[in-house]
Image 1: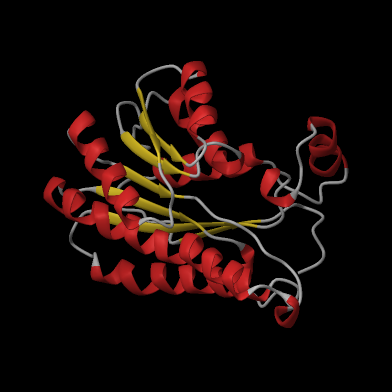
Image 2 (image 1 turned 30 degrees about the vertical axis):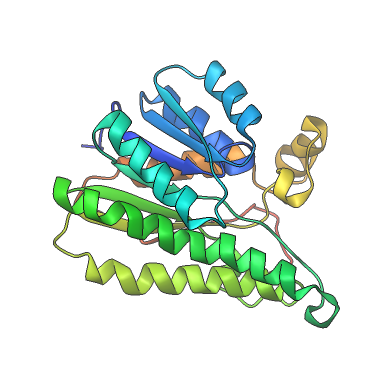
Length: 244
């Protein structure tokens, strides 16, 4: 029997666009209660107005530890529990390392890995007290292979994978599942795709890219598994992605 999602309390970071937005729409359709967090408060409010069910909208910068603590505390106060943390917020920087800006690299690492650690750390006490909970990190195929044209991004995703692999055993017996969702190329704003026609061309047409909705479906699959099942890593690739 699959795990029922209706009524689950889910925090989604980076919920204003891309994979985060798609996950919000998909989980709202399942009857989840959502906390939507991102810097773009206007986009979050517009999204929340479209969704069925209960939503808490929080403007949060994932480089600010106080924002992360506030996000978790307000979620717990509003809903009384936290069932799922989707640590999804992330940014992307490609290019030669020597030509890049170290300050931009530091910001990427703060969002892609430091914020993931802080999000997980903030919800674990509540989930332990409940005896159950799920933490899903949005990772990347770049966390499994060395992608030469995106060294800092790839390094951040390798770190995220190591975090999942090493902390998961520490949570055994707590009822908490720690998992990673690792997509290949996704046609969404993070990768410069905004036009629905372009997204359709590279996903349904060329099949070189996934859609954000594909990732949301994968996340629901992970969450719906019986509690005895942990999908530690779910790697999903476009059928025709060849540059890996």
